[in-house]
Image (spheres, rainbow, N blue to C red):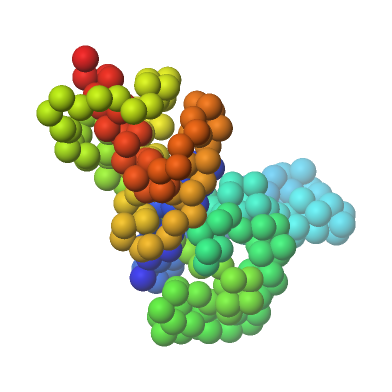
Length: 235
């Protein structure tokens, strides 16, 4: 299964659900980090002959307990292990998870992993189609693999040029190749999944920025923008 992850430009990019193997390896990497942290802090306290209980709880217990929650909140759905495995937490609709989502996942993780040694989490991920453990089911999230998207640039022949073509919207010369790449991806999403939201969002953005007024349907408008851009930048 694939999740359409929304970028900051309101374009949806396809990402597959992270495999169980990737998630287990990411968890083990995080576990190694926590063990190293615990050993270092224990050695430090022994060396300093620190015997104050509350100091131990605050400086060691809290980081161990809140590790995943804190990192996922401040690293946009990733812990160090998840980042190394190139996976992240997102909502099922492709938007970024909220702080509340991360808290729900974390609370259920205490039950799934701490009390049942991760068996329930593994079974849920393996059986479900969307790669969700119990915490994900409650929060409406999943974990996706951040595979590199195929590069699409304005130099590639995406829309055939017509002989004697006349530019319709000369304002598009102000756009960049990155802008055109986003337009192309929005059209791909519309063509492959029928999702019109990226196309509508980019159409309104371009019209607003360029001061363009037209009755062309959004899809046809964006194809025209690409042809105009190719025509003007190839001169």
